[in-house]
Length: 370
Ligand SMILES: [Fe+2]
Image (cartoon, rainbow, N blue to C red; front, top):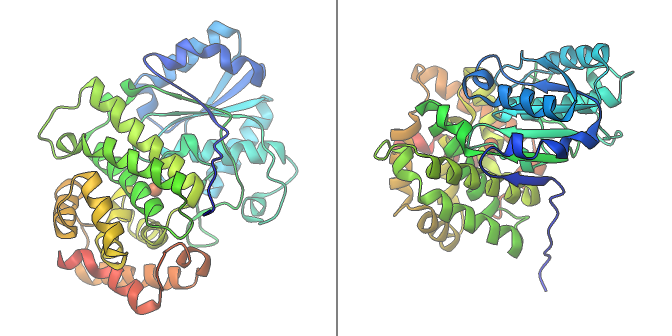
């Protein structure tokens, strides 16, 4: 029998008004919470007000750290950790897209290791215990609410990189209404990130029958929402819930397999040119799909609503656009993306085919010729 299994220890509760409805679930985490958000969207979409109301209801005190930038930096984590220690918090709530949720996990780790400095975040093999984390997604891409991953930007490493700890949230509360406030760019970039998780988990050397089953289901759910991402259909409550479900399934799938080459290639593109994560990842997807086993590629495309790799590439460009920088700057960065990934054999091994620098370069440049 092939290796198989399932492990996803986050308790996930979904539905209308989930944050208010399941407030009582947070009581056991302590008497004071740190709410971690970005600067604006948590207020605009109403999640911050819902969290405050939920915590008031159960008599839990709270404070807020709202300085999480996109692709959060190590410095931001340390600033939030110091604030959390001053405030004496017992647990952390990350609300927003991937950045606040990933930040919440890293902050929770550093609260538990109060005597450690920023270097601890990238110390492989160190104690990964953390104070409890609650995740509340407001976009439809990251899946951070069901993964153990926290990706940070490090000036020391000069790139984005996952920290080497498994940090599953204890609880995730999912309500599609928060997505209704996302702008088109956010919707498309995060929607394509979710698709990348599904593809990269499906076409992955660590894939198991169960992870593939989850990825396949996620692709079917995602496909139904392609008209929304193309702007052919209005985003309504049903599609919002469904897009968030696709993102969650993508998260569960990569929680089992990890991501693969497109994510590995994307980090330098985001770090150097500020290209949003989903846009950066799917820039490398046409090349990855073409390099995969043709049967796997055809199945993934069919399940997610595409007739061919070229059609996927064209629709990606329509929904997310190519990075808007001079050709020479882009080529230089693509070379950096290739070199970064070539130096990461563990990530290269996630591809279920032989990888060399020439293939990585081909994948890196493929979107330019679709
Ligand atoms: Fe991603």
